[in-house]
Length: 250
Ligand SMILES: C[S@@+](CC[C@H](N)C(=O)[O-])C[C@H]1O[C@@H](n2cnc3c(N)ncnc32)[C@H](O)[C@@H]1O
Image (cartoon, rainbow, N blue to C red):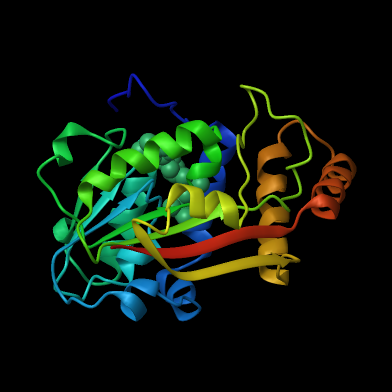
């Protein structure tokens, strides 16, 4: 991983690494893709070019585009995430080289000659301070041309931990409302194609997954009773509070 001098780096702790390992094991491609509504397919008016997922994790967006004509790029500073993505690509019946992978911190000069038709920033900006998120968005504009889609998902200001004081050590460093999205993607430069704010309880499936994850994190040094209490505490407070948006560069 190459570290940026100007933007912060969000490194995963062991608990989050375990979370994504279990996610890989518990949620096969077919299950995830069945429930996935891909805005690239709905809004992009070209059938070829480059698509980039920044902080891709096990990118559902790219997995859903494997059969397309697009060149696909996944960037994630966490190598294990890209290894899971490679495995998912193979499980979908493709050679892992169908996607170009990079563990570089983005924005990276290695991409300076690229223009992308779609850029995905899903579950990424809330790990940055708001001013850093703005700087990040400013930097990715250089990879856009008229018609480029930017697809994002961020924690909303309704998020269950948004009331806590944000310190440099906080896991989530910013929360967003519609004005924040419009400030980062001003109407003078971008057309807002879709804006969805969701505030919902976890589904039963996600609840079961979170219980399983908590159990696996704590099982070595906690009793079953202690684990149940921590689980209850965590789930009592937790909700899905996010914003999904799609903007198009003018
Ligand atoms: C919460 S995960 C989101 C994964 C996926 N995009 C999703 O929506 O499920 C955030 C990912 O961003 C990666 N990441 C954070 N900052 C990054 C940066 N500047 N460049 C590349 N990857 C980054 C982390 O390693 C992590 O895998």
